[in-house]
Length: 559
Ligand code: 87F
Image 1 (tube, rainbow, N blue to C red):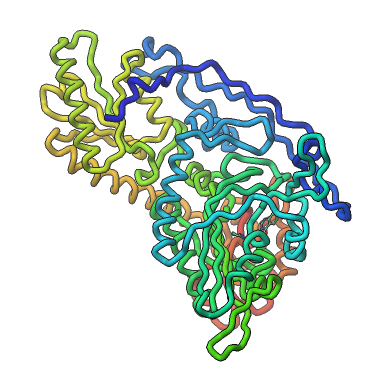
Image 2: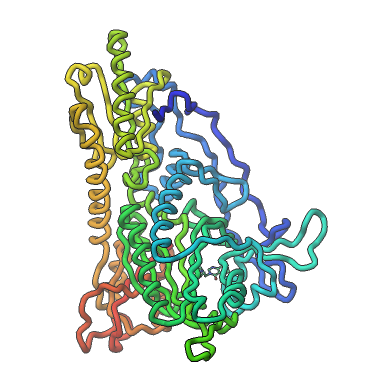
């Protein structure tokens, strides 16, 4: 039985975190410092506020017997100060610890377990498609990185370099991978000779480093993050394009079916796509409280752009040399941040059951005057229920700690976001029942012991579906169809996204971004050209330029 009795979860002394570093370029790993000929300066860093990682006061839990365990709650609220609420939440719920390198975070077991859920789900499905896992090195030589110079150029300030080993300056600095096209494709060129070597479909689960200068946010934007990157090569455009959409559908599945976060599938505009791609497809999520869109994951068709750069060629049936068609696709730990922002509330995390490392907590509630035999029977019963649920593959934990009150435990497990709490008190012992309390709605129901093993798995799936439906309803109400710039600005200022007919010109996007920038808010950009959109009758005009509209575009301020 999984029990926290022996796992010591006690009020720890407040952890303080060293102030973030002053400047990024002076140490052995420096961003954009290495290549001699490059003169660019690292952009000014948006410093993180030094975070004092005080845990919420836990009191002794005893004083609050039966009622609210004082001090466990969050000080900030989602509605009133979203940013502070989020920072406080990820620490208090033991997902994240701040680290003394600015923009880097520790993923604690509660967070890492959720990443493992995403990994297991996605890994199983890409393997079914025929993708194999592999591992390529972390380091890239300057020469190899420059093979892709045109595409890396825009990203150059974010590339971190190792310039020293010990006290010795390295003869040739070595880059730390920000993505692995340049690492992998020289080997694709070696391995692919004939059409019989295709398709080649590889994935790797790794960390990458991008020395971002924008304000860092746990999960959402960090300088090192975890992801999967898929890199594939095909003989034909058709096969490559089919995979782009197969993978995009899996990304939709991660967000909607696991994280219970609604997303919009679409194509990126030319301005927003990956510069090296033929085209980029994306799943876009949205955070109603901030009114900002957020890119969930991207699946790129690279066309023959990289195969031409890296000479990835094969001989076709007629012994003619052809360039391979390639794709690349990535999903990062950002997905967990989007899930947290979407569902959590002022009491803490609210985890969709499929994501929750523990789905049910069983809490026995003996009273001070409960007879010892009843307490003993109660403990036997919770063990039995725990085992019955484990047999149904429910992830369950029983909290039998005696040094905390039930009220404190309720708050603790609410903060951690467990979808269901199962209470068993002396009255329930008499009646042969338990009380189930839902984390998402607070609704309670009474279930007979004999029905627990059947009812709980059903209820968990109901919670999963209800959480998705609730999130979808919130997001659905936040998209406005706009036919003029005036309507567009009203939508944005209402913290909404705007769906507009658009002439699909980069110059318009740049102008709209400038014109929608206000003293308090960033400019808007296209999030995607949605695959599902209303009809666009002949003669429909672009909301901004008045020119004939070519497609619908979804716009928003964004992360
Ligand atoms: C930062 C520094 C250097 C993004 C970067 O989206 C290079 C890059 O190439 C860079 N940031 N990118 C684009 C990544 C494209 C692509 N790679 C494989 C993905 C998915 C996974």
